[in-house]
Image 1 (cartoon, rainbow over the protein chains, first blue to last red):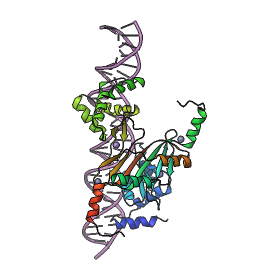
Image 2: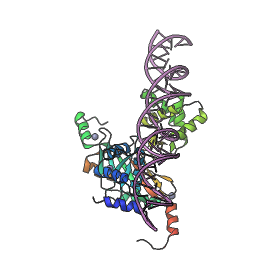
Image 3: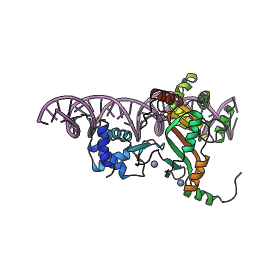
Image 4: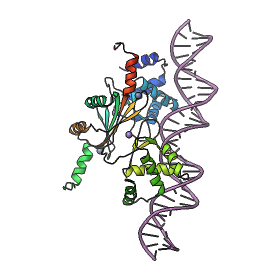
Length: 156
Length: 156
DNA sequence: CATACCTTGACAATCACTTTTATTTCAAAA
DNA sequence: TTTTGAAATAAAAGTGATTGTCAAGGTATG
Ligand SMILES: [Mn+2]
Ligand SMILES: [Mn+2]
Ligand SMILES: [Zn+2]
Ligand SMILES: [Zn+2]
């Protein structure tokens, strides 16, 4: 109820029309803050409230919401585009930790990249506006499990 | 002629068979070091030397070469998987700078992330093994062009 | 309300990639 | 060498996500 009236406003500003479908799609993504829903999952969720909506509408709406800055597309290389809420205040995309074992995804809100981005500007003259960062490895739980399993010192 | 005999060796070690198709695919990626070829582009290049090869073979071979550590898959969100040579000595994936204006892709060989990865291990207990990092912005040339175009101080 | 233009739903089409099937090749054993 | 069975291949059909088409319906103004 805080970002909702901005949708109408922003749609209008960009010359888009205000429709129930567009609101419904945003509602779903907002209701699932913290998750990374696929287009199909969003479609299924929208249909619960709005059974007659078409898939194409979902696929057309998501890029519009992204353009307006309400959502971000994310890619976890699982064969489909996923979306997450762009939380107000977030200036850059947050990073993701992907556990190779249990597939859990953890969000890292700290940006941590300013220094690197300065170095890159110095070395390449490339002016960075945003980034996509994924870290692959083992989450705390999976790492602990590993260490318990082979706690003999074979490290060669 | 330096990594080529390793292919046979590694294929054997992993229980894969040594085939002309697999060699031909690696040859193509090696011959295009510095580029980011799509599966289809690789297919077309392999066919020049090996006209009877099938697409499916290309799609099956690329993940095998990736598993063996010869190539990396990269994703520039243009609807297809691209591959690049895994240069010997490279321990982590290098980063890419993507210019939003001219679409040029620049490689950053410096890792620069050790410090951040330590912080993440401290804060989340997540043990990082590798990463995918893309920076979006303006390359030096496009940035210079921009600054020349509007060199009046409108910054509000 | 009327007009002009957007947006939508249904569904066909596309696109990258995978699976299937019949056939060939590899390499270990005879 | 020749045999032989598993593994790999080419070609074609299939898959699943996403996009294009188009007639019908909705939205914003006057
Ligand atoms: Mn996230
Ligand atoms: Mn590269
Ligand atoms: Zn885990
Ligand atoms: Zn540029």
